[in-house]
Amino acid sequence: MSEIHPAQRVAVLADSQNLYHSAQSIYSRNIDYTALLEEAVDDRRLTRAIAYVIRADAEEEESFFDALVDIGFETRIKDIRTFADGSKKADWDVGISLDAVTLANHVDTMVLCTGDGDFTRLVRHLQHEGVRVEIYCFEESAADTLVDAAHDFTDMSADTDRFLL
Image (cartoon, rainbow, N blue to C red):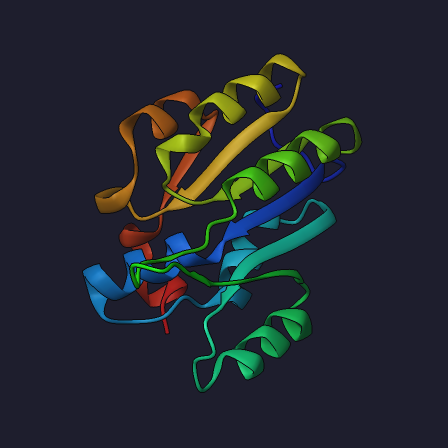
């Protein structure tokens, strides 16, 4: 499946940590999730939109989570873990992958908003299942293997006025 048409069922899965850190390190700006969702859906039928976020007890994160819901995203929230040595970890790779595989039978197109190369194998699996896979992220922080594996890649750096606040 390589053509885009209005009857396509689309799921949008946003790796918010990956997007946030990329936007901050490259542009010192934040993601415009309204624009991201609108562009990713592209006048097709939205089946699910899920934003995967990390709770780190930062000042404005609850209002950010609420804003995502207002925009149309479901939120999956994971608390950051602090280890005995002081290191911190939280990622959604397994959760995103499980949701994508679960949704594969219910959509025609999966839009993954991440540049994380760990998802390359997921992209290939979804394609094997007959799902079109599109990637939205910043080229500067995108894994080449992920970009090459996808049916389509949208470089958010090419239109920062649209994708960044």
